[in-house]
Picture 1 (tube, rainbow, N blue to C red):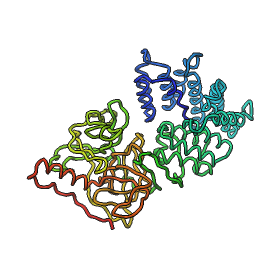
Picture 2 (picture 1 turned 90 degrees about the vertical axis):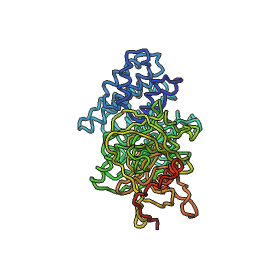
Picture 3 (picture 1 turned 90 degrees about the horizontal axis):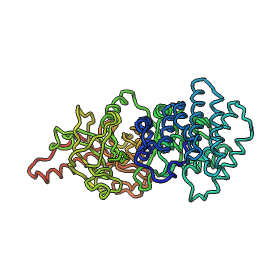
Picture 4 (picture 1 turned 60 degrees about the vertical axis):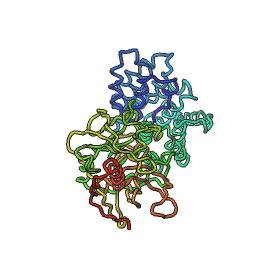
Length: 525
C-alpha cells in the first residue's frame, strides 16, 4: 500500500518538490529519478526530495539504490521524514520478496527485513504511523501463508487490532483516504469482506486518490495479500480499484509487472467518478483482431496530453488533417480538444481550462517533448459543441481519418475512446462500447472514461473519427425527445463540429461555397 501523505503534511512544498509530486501522481518514476539526480548535490535537494527519489527508485525496480538513498533520513533522529523513510525501506524489502517469489527465488530474510522496518516505524508512533502498522499485518499474514516463522506468532492479529483502534479514534469526517485503505486491509485480515469492500469503495471514490495511490493499493492486494479474481475476496475487492484505474489485463501486466490470468469482471455497482458529472465508467470486454490493434497504435501517435505551463495535466487532445474539417484549413494540421480543456478565456471560460498560450502538448508515442499550440481557429462553448480547433504544425502524414457515417444502432454499433484517463498512460476503451443513441449534435455511448478523457477522439469500429469525448454521467438526459435519464457518456458528433466550423468560416468569407460533406449514412433506427 502506498504511504499516507506525510510528505504533504510538512508545510508548503518548494517548486521542485511540487514538480516531483506531480510526476509521482502520474507514475512517471523514471522522470523523478532523473530530475532528482540532477539536483542531488545542490541546496534544493531537501529531505522531501530524497524521500520522493527513494520511492521512485523502488517503483523502477532499484530497491538497493532506494535503501542507499533513504539511509541518511533513517540515521537522522531529528528528521520529520524518518518514519516515512523507514516505511519506504520496508516497502523496498517487501518488493524484493514478492519479486523473488515471481522468479522462483524465495528470500525469507527480505520479508522479515521488510516487517522489521515497518514495525520499527509503527512502534515509534502507533497513532500516526498506521500505514506502516497495516503493512506489518499484511507481511505477517504472508509469512504465515508461506511458512516463514515470526518471533511472535500472534503478532499480526494483535497488531491488526492496534491499527484498527488507532484509526477509529479519528472521526470519519476527518479521515484521509489512507485511513479508508488501512481499514479495508484490516477488515480483510479479519476475513470481513463486506466491511473491507465498503472501506475500499470510500477510498477509491475519494478525489484525493491519484493513479499512483490506486496502483499501490492494487499491488498490495494482488502481490502481498495474493488476491485474484478466482477467490471470493478478490472477486469483490479488485474490481473496485479496476473501475477507477480502467486497465485491462495487458496494461496491468505491463504497468505493474505481474500477471492476471483470468478475465477482469465488471463490478456490479457503478460509481460516479467526477462530482461535476463529466465522466463515468460502464463495461464488459469484447475481443478485437491484432490487425485492428495495429491500427490503434497508428492512431495513438496523434493523441496527446494537454498540460499547462507548469506541467500539470489538463485533458486529452488529438491531431487531424485540417482539410478534413474545412477547405480553409487544407494543407494544415490542426489540434482538436474540448472547450473546457483549451479556450480563449482559459479558466474564465471554464474552470480548469487553459488559454492557448498556456497550453503544452505531449505525445506519449512521440517522445516527451512538449509543444506549443498555434492560432485558435474556432471554439464552441461547453453547452454547444464543447470543442476547440487550433493550428498545430506536425511533420509527416497524419493518419487519423474522419467519417460522418454512423452504423444503425441495431444490430449493435460500437465506438471506442482513446485518451489519457486520469492523466495516466494512453488507454483505449475496450469495454461495453455500444453506441446508445445520437441526434444531430451528440453521440451517447457506454465506454470507460475518467477525468482526463475530456477531448479524446471517439472512433467507430473501423477506427475512423466520429466524435470528441465531452462528458459522462449515470443520469444523462436521453436524446431525441425521449423521457428520463440513463448511464451514458457523451461526445460531440464530428458532423456537427464540421457544420459549426463551416458556419464560422462562411461568416468570414460569405461568398465562399460550403465545404463538401464527408461520406455519411444516417442509421439511428
